[in-house]
Image 1 (tube, rainbow, N blue to C red):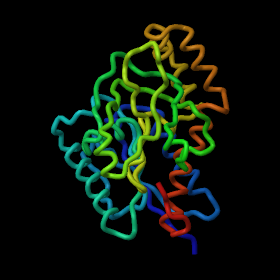
Image 2 (image 1 turned 45 degrees about the horizontal axis):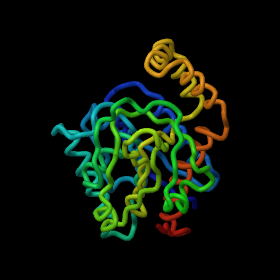
Image 3 (image 1 turned 90 degrees about the vertical axis):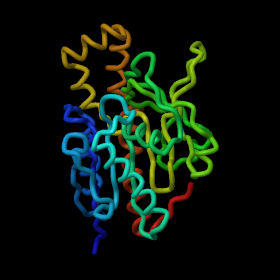
Image 4 (image 1 turned 135 degrees about the horizontal axis):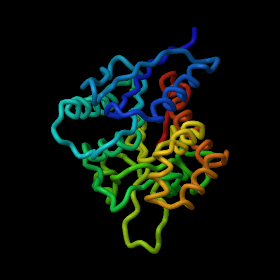
Length: 278
């Protein structure tokens, strides 16, 4: 009998339409299409319905990106979300059967703030486009990043950034910084943290590994988005982005690597096939 996995997708988009959720659902559905996998998934609209999954009801969780500042304002959904993070983390410390969580962009920033692992501040300008992401020394050994170049490319879209990681706090919790944003030697600003392994079971990124060429092409070809990009970033930036979308070695490779590997790694660990080492 095939093992069955229950996956919860936490929609953090506050009701705003986006391509990210379509991509996350597609990756989860592709995972369930494998011959040796079966299961189902459920979506929770966290910021609209003030609801989070009961961590005991699912095996694997993916928490999406989303708009606005990640700094808490005391909303009801925030309290529930932070409680969910702590309950899942504490469960993994105490229980043999672990729970697995992947955090994307806004969710990643929320977790870094909540666990006080780094500073999160507004950027001087929006990071937007298909950007190089550089692996750290630890990142070069990370299973979820295997097969990706250094740097590899990913969709980056954020007004805020995780910076100044607290090294002692990270070390005490067993966390590792795995990626940083592109190198900008001409700009005297600290490079943002782009990926952290919080534990054997919890992984987070500040970019969008779920993004695929189809969705981004559709998004960037919208008249309003094209006009916005050209106005704020220039025609050359827009042209370069469109070229990168057709490059199999850039966001398509990232899309086919990180989250699929996370899902498979979690499934193997749940089935006791392959323990996760960090």
